[in-house]
Amino acid sequence: MIGDNGAGKSTLIKALSGALIPDEGEIYLNGALVHFHNPLDARRMGIETVYQDLAVAPALNIMENIFLGREIRRAGFLGSLFHMLDKRRMMDDTIRYMSDLKIGIQSMSQPVGTLSGGQRQGVAVARSAAFAQNVVIMDEPTAALGVKESRMVVELIRQVRTRGLPVILISHNMPLVFELADRIHIQRLGRRVAVIKPDEYSMADAVAIMTGAKEVEPAHA
Ligand SMILES: Nc1ncnc2c1ncn2[C@@H]1O[C@H](COP(=O)(O)OP(=O)(O)OP(=O)(O)O)[C@@H](O)[C@H]1O
Ligand SMILES: [Mg+2]
Image 1 (cartoon, rainbow, N blue to C red):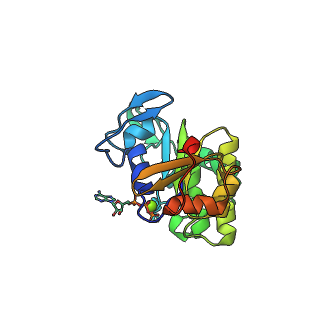
Image 2 (cartoon, rainbow, N blue to C red; image 1 turned 180 degrees about the vertical axis):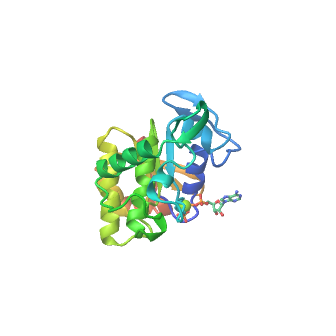
Image 3 (spheres, rainbow, N blue to C red; image 1 turned 90 degrees about the vertical axis):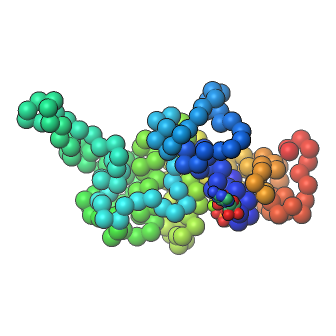
């Protein structure tokens, strides 16, 4: 999804991830009408979101961030009376998620606050990829990152897609969008003005449609 600052991209994905309740319109998931009252509703329906203002907890370690709010528990020594955190299983899963996505981090028990921006972004992406059943939404995942870190996150996005999970990516980086996207949704003044295919339009055309300098052909409107 592309669009100028303030075009409504983040607002749209907040509606799709239950963080905002839209005043109008309907949301369909796999053809069925759905209603989200909060982000948990959307997560339960298999929609995972990496927000623009990155939502990781710096003081918690990687495993704790991955499982935040959905910790795995096991029966304690008094049977089902006391459920204890199943740290070994969560740690094993964390190592698997991170290595599935080829995120190189020495220790999964280091606080996320000690990681680089790219690695932190990697944790947020790994978490969404691990739990998403239907779609992963990423709002500007490379905006704050350097060249090398951006490449890493782009690689993660590719791997999520290779696993068959659709990704909705919001980005201002046109070369990246044209490299990655199957379809490009263009948002302008709060509305979708076009959905184009990257091989049918140039980058300059996409930017012109985005800013209102060019009308989209009726077939793509
Ligand atoms: N709850 C709200 N009430 C009123 N206006 C809002 C609300 N939330 C967002 N807006 C406005 O809606 C517009 C779209 O904001 P949004 O964050 O969706 O833009 P964006 O396309 O994500 O921009 P950027 O590229 O800068 O991230 C902005 O002008 C913003 O101030
Ligand atoms: Mg935004």
